[in-house]
Length: 118
Image (tube, rainbow, N blue to C red; front, side):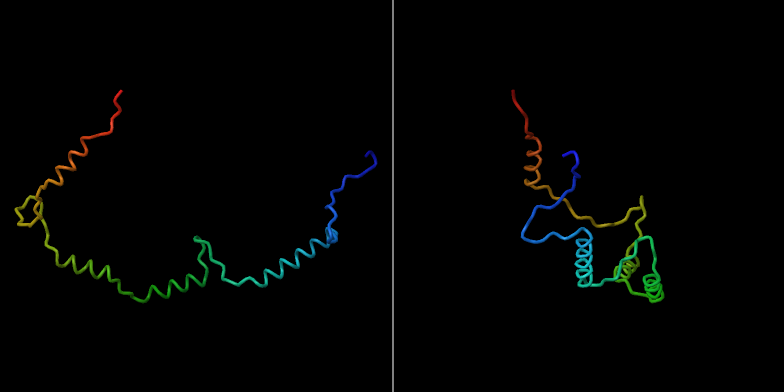
């Protein structure tokens, strides 16, 4: 073992083992083949980057007034609502609370806590 160089070789198989340069060339050919078959999609810009395509799209939408149904509903509710002044005697109807046995049973459940008796 003194005069022998340490080289790593693959075990012999039925297929012939190519030189490392040939293996790299074969791998690059296979990679190029599959890269050509992959679908081409536009690359998404980073969130902090504004590309010309996306910023132009956003600016064109800003000039067009898009109706917002939520905002219209908010404005209509705001115009219909009556101002409530604190401290004033406002005749505001509230839902009546009727205590039933159902709530009393729920209250008793809270009192039965899991405890460990030693």
